[in-house]
Image (cartoon, each protein chain N blue to C red):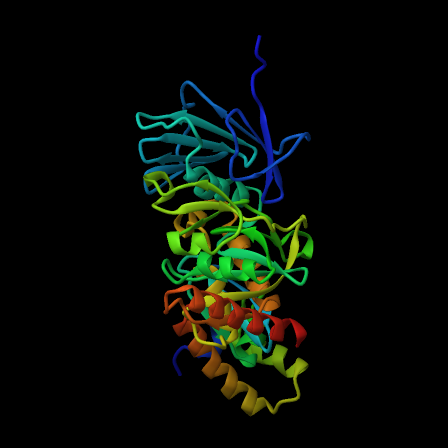
Length: 298
Length: 91
């Protein structure tokens, strides 16, 4: 007789329980779950308040179809139902760890940012920028200088109780082939359509903090010094899945929290990736580190 | 004499939320996502308009808080209210 498998893991300040492995979160032995993820045979009938792309917003949550793989229903930031679709692959797709997680976080009053984060000197440094600007690559370079992973791609910001903390997210990062070779850690997956052609690496050095005060946002491809209004705009520009967030309840409070975040956290412009090769990769990380350390010391 | 602008009851546009950032007061429009930074006069007016007020009442409020001559206050408030109307911060 086999017991039903229950997987418990931590991410974004929450304990997640699932009937499928949570490969990109940090495994936990025990604890009461904050979010329960389970397969359903059919989706519940729910009255749509608004539609966002192919998804819906309801009074108590969201519906998010991910390609032909699965449809996710979230409830009150505490429950995720998934209905496998025709292209179901037997594992939670990456979109679960991104868009679905972000919807859960937003429903709970956290701010999902499209940013990587590393721990340097006990504080979190966020790295944001447009696609192709080299966020994950810069994060990988910083990990090699001794920084610890906080999160890749999606970072949860906790502005509740007058805090401004980054919460550790996924334990893995997605990297192109060359950068993956220069990055220490366990290789979880090789390039495939599911990984958008990237390697998936679990770095050895990951933060052990539950939450980290934010030292700065490195905004790739922006000017070096941003005036206050532009700084606030920079945070808003890097909201994760902004169309969803704008339609979810509590958006005015979220925007106001972003203003408070901008009041407390400096935004440092930093060049987008230009040169290829390992020497340029290392030099870029050291240049960023010098900029960050000067800021922390000031 | 036609309708005096001072008879108009000015009120905030509730689509905006704001917060001080360094020396600026930055506001975001929650509908459009537009950001603006208010100068000190506009910020003082925004705060005075927590309840709808006429321009004369706004000026009286500012004169009670800041050491400024009434004529200069009136000129600044007139200009700032015009700009705030143009930015759809107040109407």
